[in-house]
Amino acid sequence: MSEVIVIGGGVIGLAISIELRLKGIDVKILRKKELKMASLAAAGMLAPHAEKIALDSLFCLCQNSLNLYPQWIAKLKNITGKDVGYLPTGIIAPTFEVSTGGSVGGIWWDRSQLEDQQGNLAQDITGAWWYPEDGQVNNRLLIESLNQAALNLGVKIEEDIQVLFIEEKAGKVKQLITSAGEISSQCYILANGAYARELIDLPVRPVKGQMLALQMPKDSPLTRVIFGDSVYLVPRADGRLFIGATVEDVGWSDGNSADGIRLLLERAIRLYPPLRDYPIQEMWWGFRPATPDEAPLLGGYFAENLILALGHYRNGILLAPITGQLICDLLVEGKKETLIQEFSPHRFVGKG
Ligand SMILES: Cc1cc2nc3c(=O)[nH]c(=O)nc-3n(C[C@H](O)[C@H](O)[C@H](O)COP(=O)(O)OP(=O)(O)OC[C@H]3O[C@@H](n4cnc5c(N)ncnc54)[C@H](O)[C@@H]3O)c2cc1C
Image (cartoon, rainbow, N blue to C red; front, top):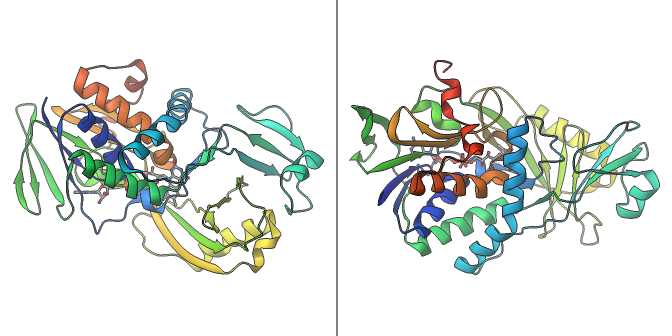
C-alpha cells in the first residue's frame, strides 16, 4: 500500500492521514469546505467518565484514546510547534440529588468538599462527582494544528472537492466520482462524519447540537469543565465559557433556535448562577455523526480497498488518537486488533 485517499478532513480524517503519512504513505484528503464540520462545532471535552459511557467496548475505546492523548498532543506540538489548549484538569459533575452508589473513575465530593474546589455553584447542589482523568482540548486550535501538521508532513489537502459517488467494480472501489471529475487511488478511507449516508447505505444520521459562548470576567474562578444535567460549561484558557449542547434528532435543520439557546442558558444559570451577567459572544450549531448504538464504524466495508472511520457521535474529538492508530495499523500492517473488530461496519449491513 503506497497511496490513500481520505474522504473528509475533520478531526478523524486528519488524525488518520497524519498517522499514515508518518508511515511513509502518500495521502490525499478530499474535503468539501462549505460543509459544516462537527469537529469545529464541538466543545472539546475528553470525558468518557463524565459522559457515563455504558457500552463496554466503547468505553474501552474511549479510555484507550484518553490514555493516548498526552503523547498525541506532544507529537503534534513537535510537528507544528503549536499548543492546542489541552487541559487534562479533570471534570466536576455536580448533582442536585443525594448520590447513591458509585461512578466509574469518579470520586464523590460532598457539598463542603465541593465548595473547597469550586465556588459559586447553585445553593441546592448537594455534591459532585470528580473525574480526575477527564479534561478538555480546544478543538478549534486542534483542527488548525492537525491541518498544519498534515501539510508539514506532505499530506495533500484538496479543499473544494466533493465526492459524489463511490464506484465499485468486482469487489473493489474503482474510482470516486467527484465534483472535479473522476479520481482514483489504491485505497480509500471514508471519514466524512454525519454525511456518510450520501455515499454508503448504512444508518448514520445527523444529531444536531447547539452551543454558545459567553465572555467570562477576568477574575472568574471557573477553570475546569462543569458537567451538569443536560448542560455543560467548558471554560477556555482565552476567557470564553462554552455552554453546550442540545441533542436534537431534527435532521439537517440549520440554525440556532430561541428555544435551544433558552434551554441551555436556563440550565447553565441554574448550575452556575453568576453567568447570568456574562455577555453572549457567539452561538453556533453542528451535526454529530450518530449510529444506532452510538458507537463508531471502523474497518473494511463492501470493497477490499475501502475502510470506514466515521459515526463517532458525541466523542469524535476524544476518539481521534485511537481511531488514527487503529485505522493505520489495519491498513499498513493488516492488524485487526480485537478492539477494532467490535466496531465493524458490518454490524449494520442491511439496516441502512
Ligand atoms: C455541538 C457538538 C458538541 C460536541 N462536543 C464534543 C465533545 O465535547 N467531545 C468530543 O469528543 N466530541 C464532541 N462532539 C462530537 C465530535 O465533534 C464529532 O464526533 C467529530 O467531530 C466527528 O469528526 P469527523 O471528522 O468524523 O466529522 P466532521 O468533523 O464533520 O468532518 C467531516 C468532513 O467530511 C467532509 N465531507 C463530508 N462529505 C464529503 C464529501 N461527500 N466529499 C468530500 N468531503 C466531504 C466535510 O467537509 C468535513 O471535512 C460534539 C459535536 C457537536 C456537534
